[in-house]
Length: 331
Image (cartoon, rainbow, N blue to C red; front, side):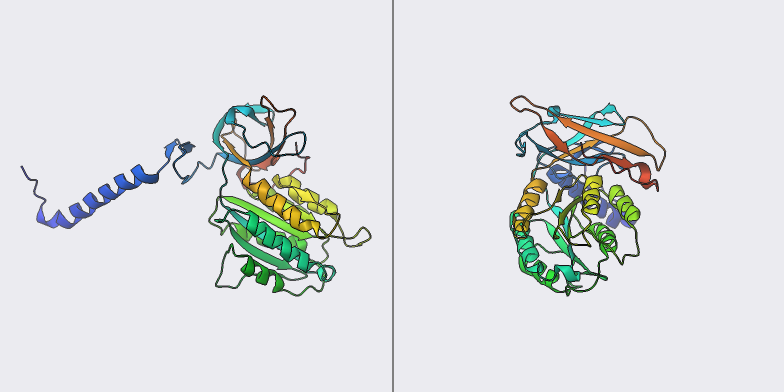
């Protein structure tokens, strides 16, 4: 017998029926399985969201020769928070697209170096995932976005080159303000994984912000920060320790090229590092008050390998509190 909808509800019934059909189609096509807000892995699905209590790490693993270990599985990893082993709830090893910010020093000492920086940026784009989205932050005593207002992000080498060339290489250095600006800009990106590449001598003499504030922002973010120090041995403005600390607190890496043209190969190595990382997530077994600092240690081991080294962030602040980030060595 045909069901007849009351006349007043006919339009609503039609909308509900159509919505139900669309929902079934979408769920069957792409939705991941989620249990208590935590993703259950389905290799053919896209991740929509994860629980806010899930701590997500991006880990780079190398063997004793310094080569990436790219064929490990979830059982090869152990994660510890404050010394207590955690159950891994999310594990992926895939080339996922990234939001990348290039933070480029344009102080007077960089004038003769920008050609090599542009070549390095071009190499990075060519070695990256085609679905990456990138932006440029230029700085001397002023901080500015390099791309035009009509272009938020790009993966085109010519647009990034023009963005880097947009600012003159003159004046003093506001490195801390530039990093803070770039961390904020990262949040507008649509990719889950966020990366900054900072090219500078590490010196700062005009920022409104100080280093502890910037380290705090970097440690609270999910971004990986890679730093490249370009300076002469007798450069009075150089500060390699700042570059080391920015990288260390986020689980990134720091490079000091012996020759200026080594920057191109360094950017190629960073692109490979980003594409070969493991994504590991866990839900902490113990509660903590907002502002508490929790230490993280990740170890890896597998048959056929000798000693493996894991580079990832060494801790996080619960609930984005205001306690200073501990600047511990990468383990």
